[in-house]
Image 1 (cartoon, rainbow, N blue to C red):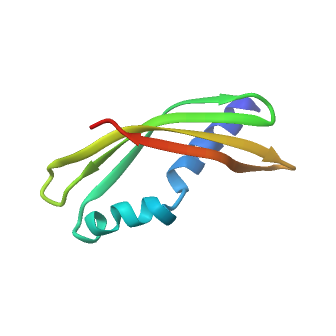
Image 2 (image 1 turned 90 degrees about the vertical axis):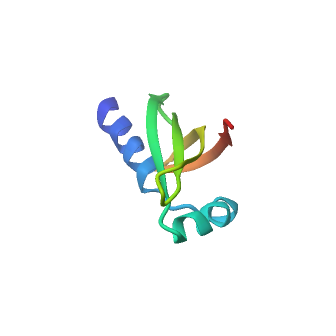
Length: 93
């Protein structure tokens, strides 16, 4: 059961679209053909609270490394659905 939940959390991290400030920050880079790669490092399931950690890399259309950093997302189980409770990321450059 836990393994299935953890795999589901990893899938959520990859499926989440960027919105708001994050979308504005990367919109121009993505428009020009750049990419953002998100890698899930660890997921921890605490029953009704779960945490996913990992990293991300932004690459320009020319393949140039633009930025990289890490993220932490906290999920809260509401009924049978995992909802994002807290999400934060940073630049390591």
